[in-house]
Image 1 (tube, rainbow, N blue to C red):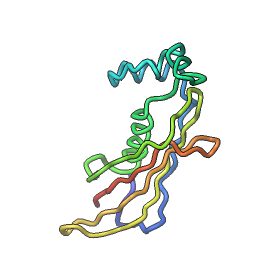
Image 2: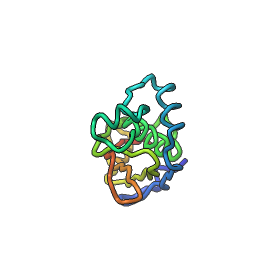
Image 3: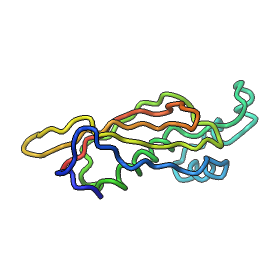
Image 4: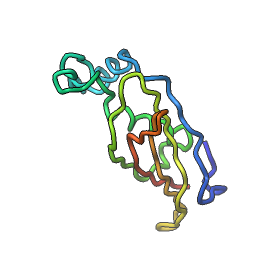
Length: 136
């Protein structure tokens, strides 16, 4: 956990790199999330849509960003968290979640850091962007 009092604009959160996403990861996430969309687990359905293979749930990448945040700050300090889905994450891709402090403000007497968030694949593809506000 990080003391927000020592943060400055430009502070980078320690990156979270996960193992390549396997079919097992997708099946387990489908079960845990209740999202059994066949585009994520059925190669025949993915092929019928013109795709080479299944792809990861967008919410899985969102969960990786959530883990990045909670590895860095106590969950009770998260004031907001939002994302925008930018691209699909293919099976076997290895996402990296990153965050950078872009602003520090005081709201209602509480010091808060705004963190810009990104999930990027090894080839440079950005699959998810977003931001979070973390309180002191």
